Image (tube, rainbow, N blue to C red; front, side, top):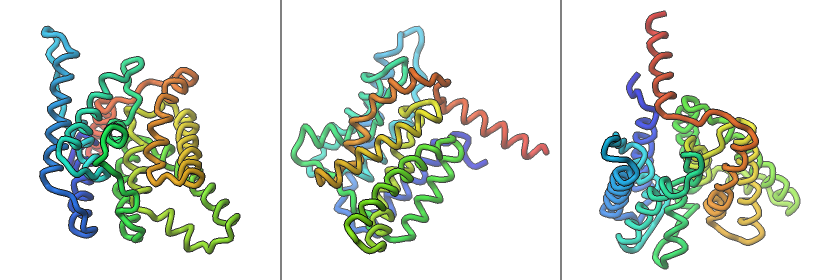
Amino acid sequence: MLYKDIRDYQILFLSLFLILGILTRDWTLHPEFIGVAIASCIITQIIFSLITKSQDNFPVINIRSPLITSLGLSLLLRVDHWPTMALAGFAAIASKFLFQFGEKHFFNPANFGIITVLTLTNDAWVSPGQWGEEWWYALLFLGTGGMILKRVGRWDTTAAFLGAYSLLAAIRNMWLGWTWDVYFHHLMSGSLLLFSLFMVTDPRSIPNANISRIIWAVSIALLTFILRNLFFLPTAVFWALFTLAPLTIILDQFWITPRFSWWNKTELSAENHQLTIIN
């Protein structure tokens, strides 16, 4: 097995997406902003880890999580000035430590950082259509995202979100009498697939139980549909995820299931790999 920690695959794929977007989509993304996002996320992670742990229990700081968050910010967020990107990185990582229930954070870090700068500044924006609707982007995202979701066991969340949103979009398409090419072009949006596979499925912040995740994902799809088509909000998916994030707390109280752990998943994957080799 190339990587023992599943997050290493996320880092690899998100980095490739970032390079691909810069080379093929002509993004106006300055390299220094990527550096600021990475630095602000990692530094914030280190500071809060040191603050929240006693001197007798010195924390083992894993930079994988802040690196994944910083790559997500670089992929989705556009800013005019580097302090705005630094604020997004700080807010994203700080949210993991400040907004917890039962030692579990319930806001998606990258999404929290995006919403923070969209709300507090006037030089930040998100372009949901930046990936276009090319079919090969969709295949790339589905293939790489599927590999990660299979390992962490969160296919149900993506399926529930995309299934509910696709159904609502189909009903609207038929109601308006539009041709089906409009419908498929909308669902082939690279940004929508990127959100569905890599953001709404964050195993550390979404509900623990299978039924809870399905209810949660369908709720986000419904709110996204309403915000996009009734209030014409282009960043509807991000606002829907942010608004319904606290619902995780309620659902986890109704259906009690052990909390996800990267460590356990990593160890399980390693053990399965060893058994395959032995057999």
